[in-house]
Image (cartoon, rainbow, N blue to C red):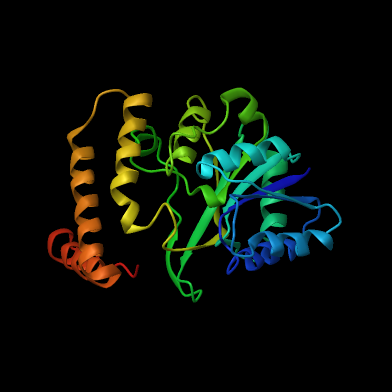
Length: 276
């Protein structure tokens, strides 16, 4: 069994080496790395060239301008040869040297019932301080209602899915992974690996930045119309909250947005504070 790890990058010279190191340090064998670089001009391509020279063909990469992460992924899938595919960002890294070995034991038994297998994602600061965990088990009601997605940095996709359900939708800049899984899981269920943290994901990226919150909600509203039909009033409330997050970030950065969010959680919802 071969596992392909696809990494999308753009001007990631400060993090791409760390990401690749976390893959090359895996105790499991038969891992392929495909890096889809979006035409970086900060030295990322030079790092990839140096890394590939010493990896004996296990690292495949290209650098070409693209229209977003979905297009980068689609190009990389065409080059990947693995039975299972995992997608990472250039600022992500595998959580431990035995992650792929442990996941592989589950993947070997997953077929034919499961073609989507997932674990957990640890959220970390740029200084690698853990501030949260994406570890919620799959909920059919929330997933099919476009209220909660699987953390794509911990999702292993069997390659047969891409032949059956097509490529990622390049018109979606943030929610393309969610859209694909809504297609792929329309008549089946994913397999959850509880207690297995696959990836340490750095906060502040495309999908979790407060600057991108309104755009993400708008794309999720498109997904609801596409896969569910209609539009519940809750999505309009989410959009309003996203714009508030955006405005607070513009006014006072993450500090102000986080402070007011925690006041809301404590006073209105009776919940503990967020740390990011």
